[in-house]
Image (cartoon, rainbow, N blue to C red; front, top):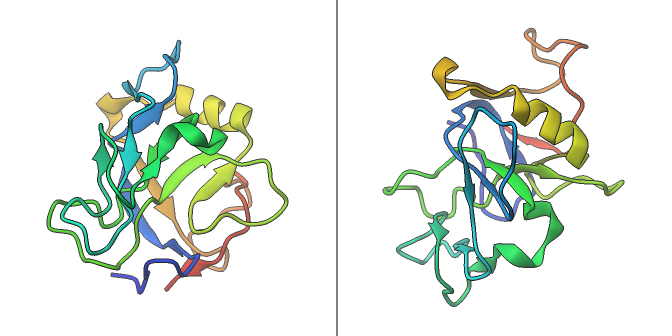
Length: 155
């Protein structure tokens, strides 16, 4: 397991199953099921909370309201530390999401919305897709990998 910590701004290295994608509005032409969230949906990033690093369908003190930011228009959950018995403080709210900024994300994987939609169109749950996050210097790295924002990775 990597050394990812809450608030360190690093992306956790690893192989993660693709299980959940959320969107603000219904998305057409995707094989992967997309869960549409509402204005009251939140994500709990409070390490002291019983619902730490979990999607919430209701407001909760200290949780982030997903509706308020364009980066949550369509996002995939990086399944790092998302189990019910997760490690408190080992990182939360790690997503693949739209990102148009010149600066790196705070640990997520960010790419232009249209590129992200194009990738998401090809995800098929029947094939049990996985997200592989590795350093560029890894022996498995390929120059043909999809470009993402240049955030640091946790080791």
